[in-house]
Length: 473
Image 1 (cartoon, rainbow, N blue to C red):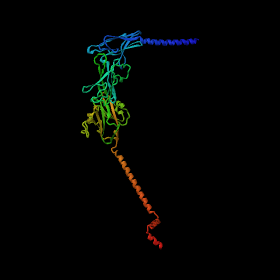
Image 2: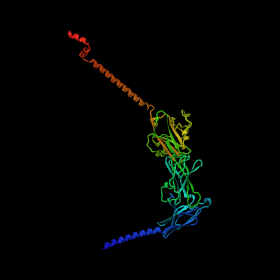
Image 3: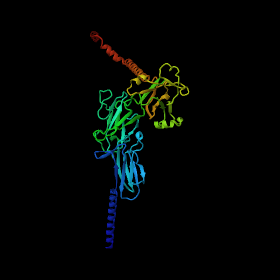
């Protein structure tokens, strides 16, 4: 009986503790809040938007004991402490005056007392409410995303624009025309294009937040990289404010490829051979590097990193032309062959086998402002076989194109013909020998026939009158 009473008491005590915890948690979440005191501001759709010159007080109302701390959270940044233990009231006002005036920072303000926290979002209609996110992308990427983050909740739609070289400004939202004016431009898409604000506070994928999607539909340069503008779209609201617009810069590493669709090419021994590296987005300064990997299997990244420290450590790697190469006047037979030809110094190329050129005709006809670097090899040898890399560098990084080069003998195309000819000669000899042996066999058979067979044969050929005369005798 005593045991049963003990079990009942323990069960009742456990339920009491659980209810106490639930009650404590519920009352703790309900006993803290933030109220704002302000003059001015604009209210639309139940949300208050402050002007750059407005001031406000945030009051943290709570019954919990302890000091109050305030933090500010803005998109993609950790919370920043605004004040620590300074009281329940937080006064926010612009600083400076005139053109130097800095308005109140927009974002989520949180007051914390002990383990309790309350939030209040401050929307300020000023230029700092749009945060441009500049992008440096890989030059070989097929798609790029440009973003302008907002310090608004809910967020407003954005209008994306691009100013062309002739001064024309095009709006990239919706369907718009290609610069040629005849076809729709499929290179730009704004992923979310509603006409009303939207609560994006719980959306972590920036591609959904009125992001501008850029595709390399017809080549990236010169139409894709550069400056874009994102503008706050408050059309359809009662809010009045100065135009809020920001510039987003899109840059990329070079786009590099080796001319030709094949992954390998073939050079002829003791002949000339050239490789054409086509690249775009390198800027005004040409920085090209040609490297041959004859035997090593090192990765390209390790090559770039280790070569800067000790090029001798790369067995099998040969830097044919470096980024900061010093060129010398070309000698015979190069000096008059091509106006853009550049040759290496005697120390770098004692045999004068390597030189660089450019294809001006291709460059002038390219719509993507592409440039070329042609590596020419004179008097090809077996040592020229291997994987060739063309590295192109700009201020944003390095990209490369690669191709494998095989070396064949000058008379390599003749060997199959000689093989076929040898087969035909051998076949003719075999036929002649067989016919000769067959003729000898027939002659021997004729000589070996019996004599009686010959007499009988002769008799059979005599006339009938002669046979009758012999019989009468």
